[in-house]
Length: 635
Image (cartoon, rainbow, N blue to C red; front, side, top):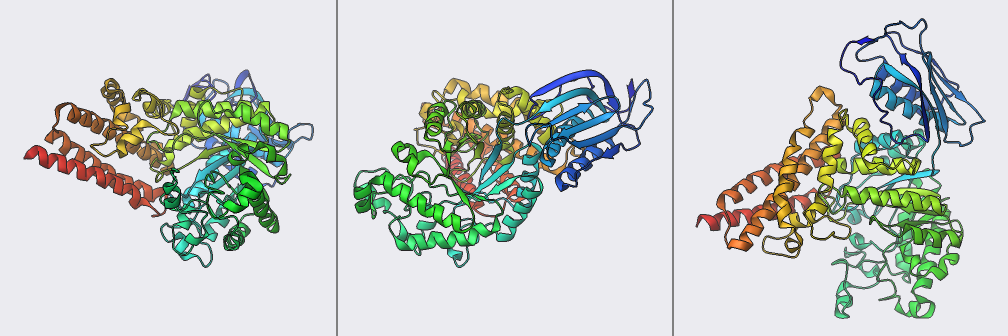
């Protein structure tokens, strides 16, 4: 066989994500010539039509393979609905020398089969290996949860792009974490500090999710995590307790603003009633995540008398029931985070029967097994909810993410979890770029579909190919390198954060995180990251615009880590010698000024203006320090 152009050989390994349950190779190859294939489909499902169009586009462009024996017929791509296939999301895929056949019970199964075919076409071009695939998901509900309230509010374009990537990974549930970043009617002050999502934004995302068989589930803070609203004068009186009152009692607070709604205040109930009425009608989903997590100060202030009568657990259950009743008025059944009820397991049976509990935890060894068993024994539906481990980091925490996601997938299956929800948070301003989340997002999709195929390296390479256009695996390797800096420079791991992130933000003269640093590792890590500089430089015509943007995000991530390592080395030298090097300070000023300019530009390519100034202010703090150091060194 001869070919024109540089295409991956047919004999190369399949890079599929999620990887199918059964994949058996067969003899021979299927070749596509200049003539488009015959298409046969019984489905008028728009998602199926879109996927078919993408397959055809991939095999009718690019270099032509010229097999030794020319095919005598035009290949066919045939779709068929087959009631004998057991799972409604399952499919069978047969590739022979004559064509490709996708059989499924439903149009959803056909759509997922075509996603696998798209990945084969993307990998192999016009020459496909013959094979037989039988596939179906482990979890019927496979979700991705994206924080849009801690800093970044994505543009509509970004959200729609993300929905398409999720559908390609066979994700079928999507949630956005909302605190104050929606245009609530009559409450302009509530979202004045950000650039909120509009009703039109939500409806556009909802429509595309419906098209691609994704349940776009509304998610709204309803108890704790209310600080962005309660800090405002108009709403402050609705809080459970002021931080200063807690501090006077020797209780550590989480925020400089009140944290939790007062559940005994009729005005608090009225506010939430109005917020639900404004928010929920824009979602077609029958589900609603009321959150209600981390309400750590519940019962410590204005509701203390009620808590004394019924207990904090009873007070919490009563509020959840109130939220459930509100949701029911809008035709929604609820999900809620499971952390608070775990403190009162004897009350699980008092929660509404149709409520789904969301068991979250983000450490690699989080006790999903223990908590899953408890929820299973209660008879309540529950999800396992691990995370991407990218928040409070610069380049992520790759090994922790994959361990956490893998652990959740296995334990959830063991105890009959009804769903898997991969969370992606944005604590402390959401400094990490979206590109840093793409590989752990994809790995979560992979283990939620097929938990037995849990190789992190294998899935990283496949995700790099299909999300970032990386045919060589070098980008995936570079992302793993950046994503494991956190453990190579730290004397001991930090909970739910990476040391490089903390070091980047720590003032020059502070030593809390500086003292946790393995000083002997800093130079080596700097060399490792310098060596991967070329990994994010691809010819512009080799990538689509979104892939090119992702590589720019990864490059600035690398540069932020390099800057942090360099600054940390300089800080350690200052501690040892009592003076700073002017040349080093000037170099760091130059590097950070360039990072700041690029970072702001990249933020606005993905997101609304929102709270960009918060991150730029961190850069400005570091720049002021370097200029002061340079001035001192000069004098």
